[in-house]
Length: 452
Image (cartoon, rainbow, N blue to C red; front, side, top):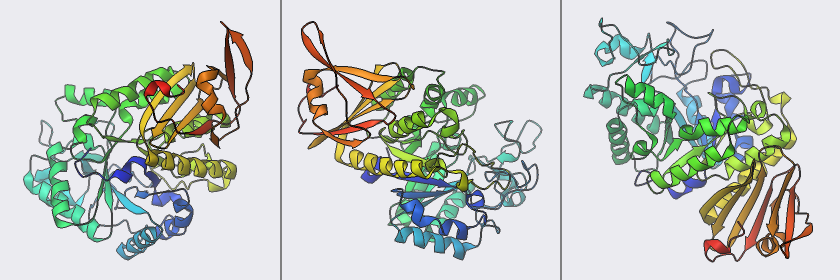
């Protein structure tokens, strides 16, 4: 965690929007019209995916990738202009949200302003031609950060957007840009701008880091990035999480990785948790049933760190809009009942993480997780049937008594049954179609006093 990361980031809700596909209008004005609903999801940060002009040379699809930017200092004319952006930002601020924009500083489009005006700022291949580190990124050329005048240009560009009202930056593949640049950019903007700025790094998965390093390129690991950034992606554990969601890996693999994050990362490092985003399939299309989606939604929102909501996720949509074409979010196909459920979950998880400091997670039986958050005045215990099994777990009476008399914050009240085993009463807790979260007051003693 950066030295001055604000405390509220630990429980923040981040809402991701691709303006071109958010509404049929495909403009800032279209997003503006949806701001009240977005704020109603307990959103703290509105993340706007790239808002800049897109390159033409080598573009993917009919409209091109928003991550192949031709001019960092301009706004895509089809979205609106700078005045429209300021109006959007002002309204978001009035609704209590900060606005974060995408920063794509590893590469530009193949016909960018920078390539034309500063060809010396680009990575070159053995023949002296502009090049990139990743073959699949065929619509871009990578920048060469050995040039300090490039640093000055990029930092000045960030300052321009801060002057426009932007509150922070989601930094695309931040791992591939030298860490020293990010540290310098943060320090210089902090000196120039007295207000708080948010820094989110799109860190990359472990296998990608290994490939890049083997090829001799820079790829910073998550613990390194926390020197400069407030938050990093949860991609370092996503192969475990995604595998568990698909039923292809044991849930325990991901739970073990959570322990690694808590113990081997800098103290206080904050993750951005997600079960979908614009680069990955919709959760509703992965987990297989509405019941599973309810449980996975509660699970990820209760993990330590900020919670990402990808536009349309709150409606349990299964179609993920195409980045390279006009493909509007199918709002009319959404599930309003799920939206209401998720709104409640996001509010509850935020309240829990703001009032509690101690987190623990365990697997009671295959696919059934238990999360415990403990604060000074109350403990919250969640039971989550992530495997889609007949969700019954059994606790001994002395461990379960507090739960049975606690306040059910989410889901159905526990049903109980008693059976004798070695002379002791056992209480079975059945998880129905909903996950369960219980608030238990007064459990402030040692860990072995918790109902775990």
